[in-house]
Length: 170
Image (cartoon, rainbow, N blue to C red; front, side):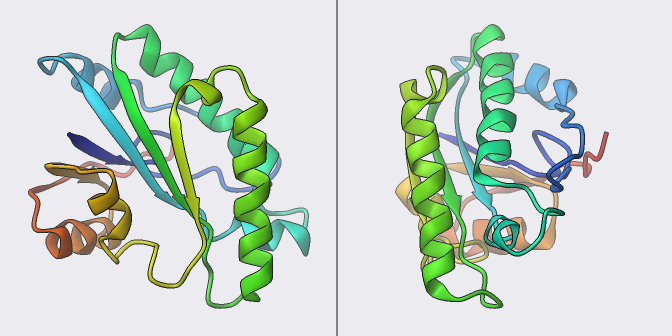
């Protein structure tokens, strides 16, 4: 199972509420050329809990729209998505706020036609996010593609090969 990081790898890190989301079609095309392509998307969304304090940050609704657009592009290329793992934990935010963000993301995904067809787990505990390997282990990945040191550390902790992708900011 190929695990792929979201922001900076599959789409731009347009993390603000108003930023335009761009999708990394070069990476999507590369995945589509694999034999029987199937991916697990693994992402830290540590900025989402800040959206309750400031309109500068990506909201659960914006994340849902962004991921819906990505999943449509993935499906159009014949790629299967086994799962999406999202962590909302942020040590700078109260635990209950991280939990609220996780619950709102999960609820938004369940109501969304495209995203409800994919297994989604939203976690919010301090042990959950990258570089901790928990999400990678739960996704049962055998290799991980990402764009930063946090991704590389998570792959190393999970003892799977890591392939660094060029950061994509559109």
